[in-house]
Image (cartoon, rainbow, N blue to C red; front, side, top):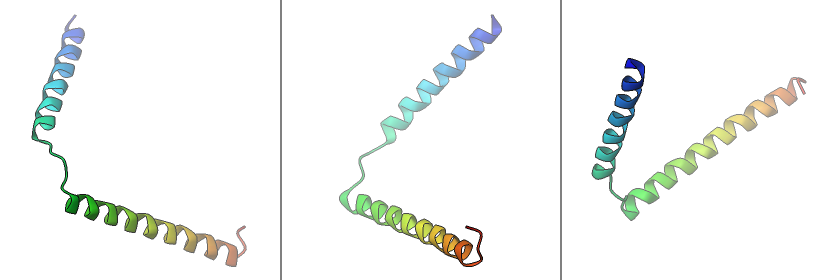
Length: 64
């Protein structure tokens, strides 16, 4: 029985925390959104370049 209460208590606490976060959250401004999009795009390009570099090195030394 104590396990069930513990589970219910944890779930209730999670819901109250989620409500609190949603009350504090706000929609990003256009400037913030564009900055996030640029940073995300740059990160994708960097990860792609790293992957391509590893692939080219593997092809050069004959691992593929």
